[in-house]
Image (cartoon, rainbow, N blue to C red; front, side, top):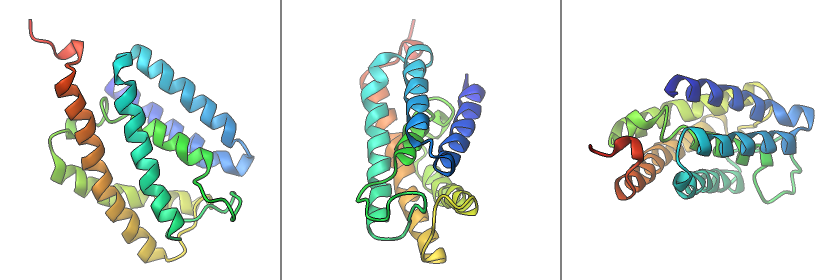
Length: 176
């Protein structure tokens, strides 16, 4: 399931990132919402809905800050829009499904999570910028902002999921 979760997220990343080029923002959001519902039926119990949605919301809010500050823009979105495009919300929802499955191994390792977030967060945005669906107006400064954002986001989001797991033990973790 770990490998499947990782592969599905990669496919969803591509779907979300390419959606604006084909005006499929709403469709990709529906697909990710359906995947998330299936995820909560087959991979994680429904009681994981709250922390999954909370981590997606926190990630989106962190991106919202970068967007409002002008560190990141979205060429296929209305430049007057005050909010992230729908495909970015879908992407955060898809990402949240990995935190308790394929990225679970990082729970309890905040320094490693911060370092990996600081490296791979900007890589993902740089990739989206290469596909022309994200603009980084202050290329180096924008990537530094994204690195800081992800250095904060990864340990925080993993901590939320781990803490929830401690408070509400998952059936697969119950002792005999």
